[in-house]
Length: 157
Image (cartoon, rainbow, N blue to C red; front, side, top):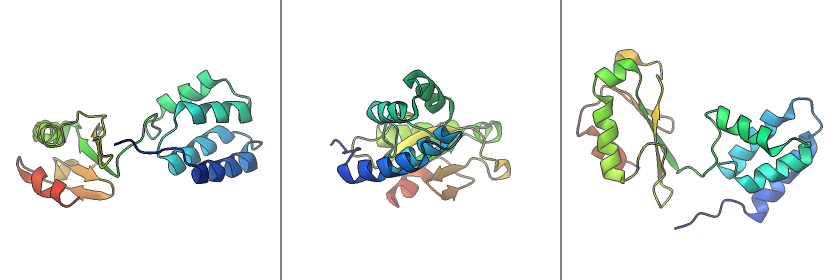
């Protein structure tokens, strides 16, 4: 099931933002953030639009997108599942939770389910070491998890 990323409405909204902000000093990050917010990712077609408008080589834009973790080249799911793989979470079996989610959703870390409902990510430390292991689903945080807990959590979404 393919998701339409670039719609006429979204493109018009983005073009208005781009035109308004393209001459601001250091506008690239601002524009990339807005592109990510509107479209959920920054695909090649939009990189070309940004390149043309800002007169910046596509290689530079691609370099910025791939350097910063918040940017994505492909669309993410409605629910982003982040499994903390920091040291405290890892030693408290976060890797088992990750394997459980991988098996249930049939996706590996960095992938999105075909229906665009879930994106699975293995994250760096989220700073909740005393609550390890920790899994975030969008803004919801689940802590001190054990094997078997993920089925009930995923069912909520």
